[in-house]
Image 1 (cartoon, helix red, strand yellow):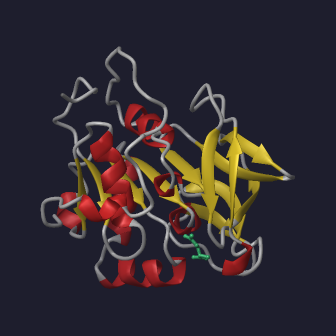
Image 2 (spheres, helix red, strand yellow):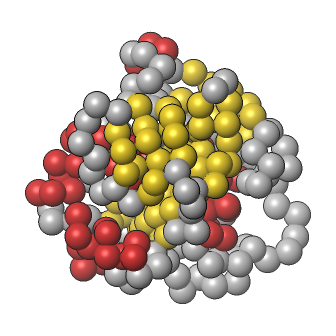
Image 3 (cartoon, protein in one colour):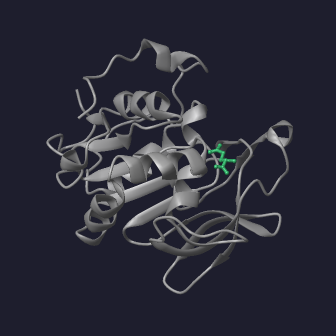
Length: 224
Ligand code: GLN
């Protein structure tokens, strides 16, 4: 049974490149209906949309090629919640150090590849009080840093002199990948941000069944 009271609302995961299935698998584990989205016409009906991690230059080109730039901006302006993980956060930022911004929807400045190369990727467990009562595992893969959060942006997690997660009412950005861990906390947090209500009951903070390859079990409906 779904742990959320409203299952008519759909969360989309932008299905152009990057970690799409891992997000879909996490939403499935918390009983939330989620679907891969490629088509501009599917975007306005969504309660929320995840722009996954991957490679932001590649993703931004595909967004332009598929004509998704305006539909994404308009959906956000009409209230669809957006969550950018890593490359997705880069696409949503208003300012990029040394580069032109892409969608420019949230008043933050980001520096890409700020920890170094792919080999400087790392894993941490950190308390994010607004998201979960216990420390949350976080995976950083060639991550950016949020180096400034402007007016109207709330900081969810600051560590070692940079911002790792922030939000406005409409947009969540995380420079790490909760979908590459056994934690469901950020997916629950985003579902609530989309207006999906958590039913009471004992909900495990971590999924005992999860493994790094778990997403391969997941066979969602074709992209819309
Ligand atoms: N380094 C990538 C970029 O700049 C982001 C990496 C990621 O999404 N894990 O686009």
